[in-house]
Length: 204
Ligand code: ADP
Ligand code: 5GP
Image (cartoon, rainbow, N blue to C red; front, side):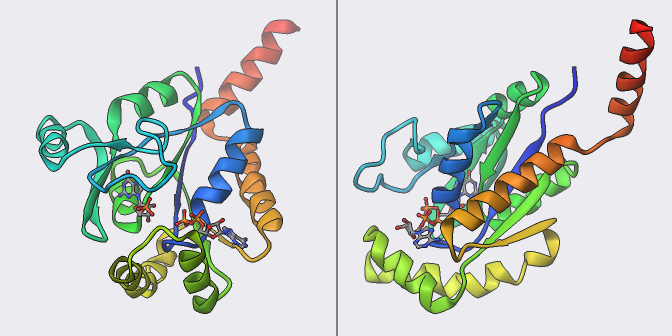
């Protein structure tokens, strides 16, 4: 069976990654999103095991010790990580997987899984980024300053990514991410070329 594709989506906090991913998943049935583990507290409306696995630091560190993360990082003062098992299981079953993770985590994945597809979501401006984080109403002043302070550092890593999508108009951005996914799903690789030729040969 052909291995699923791994899509890694990053970008500064408030750029719209979560909003875009949700829409992409609604449409695309054969693509799943990994649920990360975090030591951050749930925001209003966030549900354990759906938005994140919310755990204490000790539980997180136990999984680090057990080599249970595909990647993990300290982001804005909390630990976030991608549990390895589910992602590898889906990829092995030929299911495509989206990881919505920060730049540090994405670089770890790039090392261990270079065949991943790396997509960076940009805000149209820093002013709009500020408005979106404020509008989400989920951060304290301190947490917002921290998120904004890290934005330029994150954007500076964009040269490590394969695609960039500016999230100005939401519908345009969603369509672009969907198009990238579709294009990557149609991309040929050597293994697939052999399989395709054999399949048609068998029929003749
Ligand atoms: P991220 O996951 O990158 O931190 P979110 O998806 O939580 O960002 O989006 C941050 C805020 O901006 C949310 O309130 C969301 O509804 C809003 N938002 C996302 N995309 C757009 C857009 N294109 N135009 C206006 N507001 C947006
Ligand atoms: P938030 O607290 O806004 O949900 O997420 C903060 C940041 O952590 C975002 O940049 C998000 O992409 C990142 N993040 C979420 N899950 C993971 C993960 O599993 N690993 C890493 N490295 N970053 C993550």
